[in-house]
Amino acid sequence: MVDGAWKHVYCQKPLTRTIWEARQLQLGAAKYKVATQMGNQGYSNPGARECCEIIWNGDIGSVTEVHAWTDRPRKYWPQGPDVEPKEAPVPSTLDWDAWLGQAPPRAFSPAYVPHNWRGFPDFGCGAIGDMACHILGTPNMAMRLTAPTSVECIKQEGKSKHTFPLQSVIRFDFPARENMPALKLFWHDGRATVPEFPGIPAGELLGDKDINGSLFIGDKGMVTTGCYGERTRLMPDAKMKDHKLPPQLLTRSPGHYRD
Image (cartoon, rainbow, N blue to C red; front, side, top):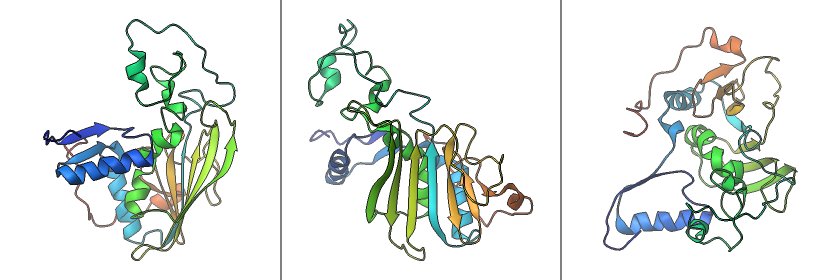
């Protein structure tokens, strides 16, 4: 942010690469007293708000466990031990030094641009930075999450010295919040299939058809959403036959960009 500009800011993810960078933007927004927002489509989806109302209404009881998953990077960009950037001439249309920004200097490689930079720690945040901001949007809002008390990587496959791993599972532990108990949240990336959970019959769709979604596990039931909070529904499917949505508590979005 530039002194004296006083401009409101709307931008898209990835907003920053590190937690420190995110905190600096937060401090800057407070200092200059300007509206500063990162677009996140899931928060504007009516399904995300329905999920909040289902959980806040107690329809699935007390939620103590949430799982969220994505097939990325597996289907969308390469990560893992087989990825090694190969040096190549810089294209005439690219200012390579400007593109590198504050990243350590290195030779140009087409492995980084225009899309696959997100798999490299010096440029991106892997699948958790690319997709968790969407898929965990509904859990963040519905579960009223604040800072976790601990974060642990409990599984990695396809580790690499160049990129983030091909697949990982990360556990976040959150303390009790307001009238909600402590929560375990699991992030699964690099999935070839949707995780399996007890009580979900084989063949029933969890999340969305593109292997993205979340599952809230309560002591009275379960609810699932898709990547952007869409297709919110109780699980198993039979639970939705006679279910009526609770009273509306949240206003509905007028559209993502107008939101």
